[in-house]
Image (tube, rainbow, N blue to C red):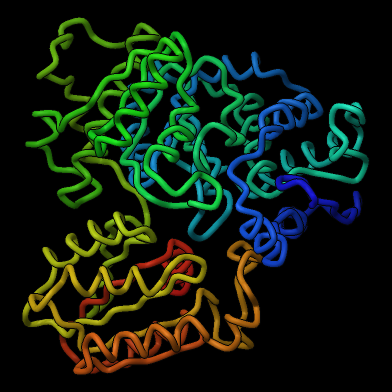
Length: 491
C-alpha cells in the first residue's frame, strides 16, 4: 500500500502565483477519503519512517533539524486542551515582547483561513507572505531529490501530504522571519508527528490525554500516552496536567526512559482566582499548564524575573496574559442581535463533556435554545448521546439542527480554505450521518423539533428567521462546523 504522508501530485504553473493558486496546490496534497479508509482498515499504528522522511523533506527545503534550535520551541501535545494551552502560552509570552521580539505559533486545524495555522505575534501571516513562502517551499521540493534506496517513496513529482507540507512551511516562515520563540502544537500523537523533528525545545507540555485517533495511536490510554510522550526530549523539562492513572504511569515510564524530568501541574492558585480570556471552568487546567510552560521558557532564556521565583506567585504579565487570551471556536460567545451563539468545536467524548457543561452554565431559562451539531468522521452517535445525557433534564433544546460542514447553500458550495477530502462526498450529499442523528435524537428527546439541513448557511438562516426575542445557539461536534459557521456569520 502506498505510504501515508506522501502523495503524487500534479504540477502547478510557475506563471501563476496567486494566493488562490497556493490554496489549490495545498488542497491537492490532502489525503482523499478512499486512501484514508484503506489506512484505517489496515489498523496501522504508526509510521516508523515518518521522522526520517520529515528530516529529509526539511533538508530538501534547505534546513537541518539543528536550524530549528534557533526558534526556541515550546512543544505541546495532548488529546484535548492543547490548542487552548497554546493560546494561553502565547498570550502570556506576548506580554514580554521587549525580550521576545517575534513569537510564532503553529496550530491546527484552522477555522476560517489556513493562514491561522502559521501566526506571528498573534496574527496569521498575510496572503502575500503565505503565497511567497508557500511557493518557495513548493519549488525547492521540485528542484531537489532524495536518495532512492533510503527514501524510495520520495521520488520526483512527490510531495508530503497536507499537514507535513504545512509543518515544513511553518519552519521556513519562522526561520525566514527571524522568530525567536515558537509555540508548536502537535498534529496527531507525538512520536511520529511531523513537528517532532525539533531537537531541543525549551519546554514540553502535555494536556489531557483521552481516547481519540485510535486507528493511528492505539485503543488504550497507555498506548496513546506512549505516543504523546514521544515529544519528550532529554535535557528539557516536561509538564503534564493531571492524567488518569494508566496514562500518567506510561508518561512517567517514558520520562524515566528518556531521563526527562516530568512535572505534574495542578491548578495554579493564581489561575484559580484569575479571570480567563478563554472562559469555562475547565480552562483553568489548560491555563495552569500554560503558566508552567511560559515560566520555564522564560527561565531557560533568562527572562523570568527573580523576584517571582516562588511557586505561588506570578508576575503581573502572566495574569494580564491569562485575561487577554483568546482562541476562536473554543468556548466562544458571539452576540448577534437577539441571538447568542455559543461555539465549541468539541469532537471527542472528553471535550464534548466539558463543552456541554460550559454551555449549561451559560444557559438561560428564558431563552429559546437551539443545538447545531455535526461530526462527519468520528462516532457522532456517541457524542450526541453523551451531550444529551450530560444535560439531563436541566437544559432542553427547543430546536435541534443536524447539518453538514458544507459552507454555502448555493450548490452545496464549500469555501476553498475549508475544503476537506477526507470524508465521503456521497455520504455528505445524501446526509447519511445527519439523518441517523436526527432519528437518534428523536428517541432521546421527542419533544425537540428536529431538522436535517444540507449546509451551514441553511442552519444559520433558520436560526436568524426565528422570531423569538432571546435565542441561544450551541454549536458543537466539529471544529470544521464551527469554522464554517464563523465564515457564514462574517459574511
